[in-house]
Length: 285
Image (tube, rainbow, N blue to C red; front, top):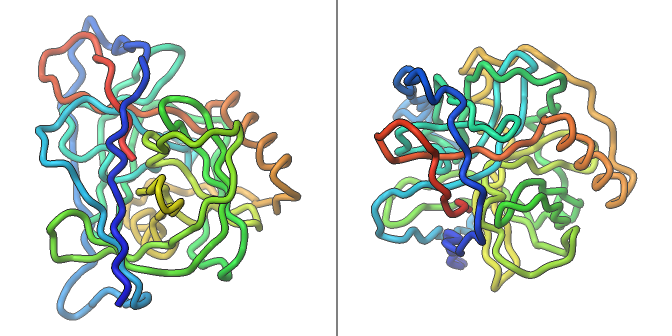
């Protein structure tokens, strides 16, 4: 069995502008975290393939960090990676130079995904699909590596399994081979975690979870696992229409439009229990 190892992308973030919490006068209510766990002896998780990845995690205390999130319902439901929000005292979505506090999280125990409930609505939502694209098809990953908006173009290798750290449970993932980036660069992809990966037909088929710069591999949550969480959350009613991507230039134009519309945003994790300023943090990847 092939067992390549993936780093957890601990790379340093340049300098992120510290964001004030939008509710700096009134303390926000405590963050409510729920868990969705479809695993059970009667309902085992499907085995995707024999290829396996180990996502290494640094043995350090929790720290402030940053990732990516995207709207999946115009009423205030957002999707991100579970490891971006897990263990945070407060979570905030960037809005007009502020971090707007999130009131509720639903974290998956099956995959690296979390549904974020927020009062921050969106004029648009991204279309989701539970169908796996064919191997060899193009993927478009969007997010904020090192805090900067970046489009990564990849090719799907296929389904695989991933295990974080020394844990025994594996998660279903899709493995992609990176081909190029817009803008060009070869730095860490830390910070893209939680962002969407699109199939060529225009549907989101997963959440960016981990990557390795050395081997050029990107792991995303399996589309069916992502959809099980979304369905269990009862937070997503929108069913936006998906339009196939023409090419990388079309993907770039849509990414820029979604950024301008606030459909894809930065999300911040604060582990400091003292209310006030959200300190700058390094990106999670």
